[in-house]
Image (cartoon, rainbow, N blue to C red):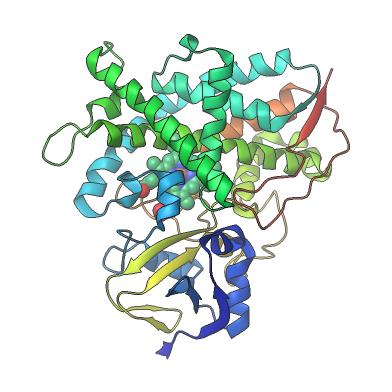
Length: 419
Ligand code: HEM
């Protein structure tokens, strides 16, 4: 077995790793001409792995743990502390079940209907030029709150707008300039305060027959000993539903790019919508950059692609690199709307390791994203509206997607014009 080669490239800030991560990890691999590479990051070494085999091993608990692996700046903004992402073993399984129990087919259908209605209302109101980013942000926030049992009618429009935007700045504030990071922390603190008040209210005034809503699920959730979760932890988990759903704003803007930056994908999809809608969505999830990588710590010596990763190593799994891996994916740099015909369903419902935009493995036992089905429904509703239900003209704009910012989306935020 070979030793992991070390690149001469040194990474001195978290921001370098996460921001440029989409291409950076590939550059590191190319530098040493190996699929596994080690680099000096802050004061430690970090080992980057990618591809289906690496992902399969990354998710095995006998190989890697998540505990202590996530850099603090990311926890303070993106995830929040003590949430499901930071747990392992039985505790993780117990907490994750609360999330997955919300995602029943009936509740997914409820979500689809709510989003469909809210998007129709917003698009009907729209005349002239508008940013898809802003519209999607508003609609996704209102829809996920409604689905979660949060009454948004009591807030004025300005407060709603602020709450919706906070969900995105928690993400962009994860690893960025010091000012954006401070804003990310402030916005997370404000969002957590908002969510804590909601949890308190739900505990004090439970509403009959709302038990299967996210708000009441987390208000009533317990730890392994049967004790109610502390309010701040329950609030972090409620935000683990709200924040990433609102972050789907980014994918809706990328969808704008896929459909409107050039005409051919739109034309193909419109001509055969029923057959191509899900393959289009899966190819979007694979092709566009979103979540760059995941960290973990090796709990045993692990062999990956013939290289020995020693116990205790800090490792990142390159998600973007795995989704663009030439060893398993044909012409990965091409957007191929037909790539997943016949396979689209399996990807998001079976154990999965080669297309891992939202993580891989099994939903309940592993850290795979709890929101993959909400994501699919959101993308189905948006693609149906953008392609079938409404007509738009496309103003001239800057469609460039910078590869050195996180999260990334077209500079123009997808401008559309509707009569
Ligand atoms: C833009 C779409 C999304 C992307 C790219 C995304 C990506 C991810 C990734 C990469 C992970 C980590 C997987 C791992 O650690 O192995 C994750 C975990 C998670 N996601 Fe998502 N996600 C998205 C949408 C959602 C939505 C809509 C929800 C909720 C409704 C959600 C809830 C979660 C939760 C709760 C976890 C933690 C799971 C665990 O630790 O067991 N995500 N997501």
